[in-house]
Image (tube, rainbow, N blue to C red):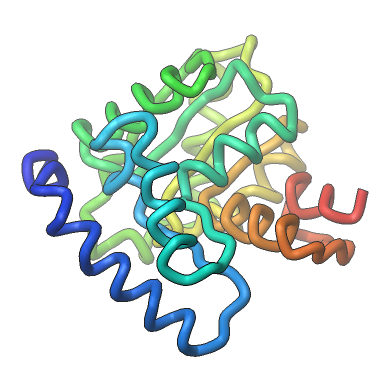
Length: 201
């Protein structure tokens, strides 16, 4: 629930720092904090607080899912954004509020409100169809943002771009794009949509 996600900061940050230190001990090159609602429910600026905590504790570059998405949306020139999520209404609204606070204009939005333990069962075709319906209501949209790494948005992105011709930013793609870009990985990645393909540009 939203109240639970707004629990005392130490309840979130202390385990996060411990987990980051553990990952650093495994000689990773980059740490990504996933789980967008944990950040968006606490408001704009919390993403930078998390990144600073991770980098101070480990000396490694880091990001959070919403921070990566914001950078990916800007990279693709998406300012008027349609937003499709699987979140409960309160968490969905926190994402919209966070995007607005980050300078984006949400021109259409919809949540599929998927039960958490059923996220993996939502097919890419279902997500693509929902995106198509949403974009049909928003002719001014520059692109669509589909957060959450636990459903198949990444597999839906090429379907949406192929049929509708609009750029798509998914949570998983944004996280990988941000990490690869920071680490200087510039391989040409085909079949994963416009954002991932742009790494080699």
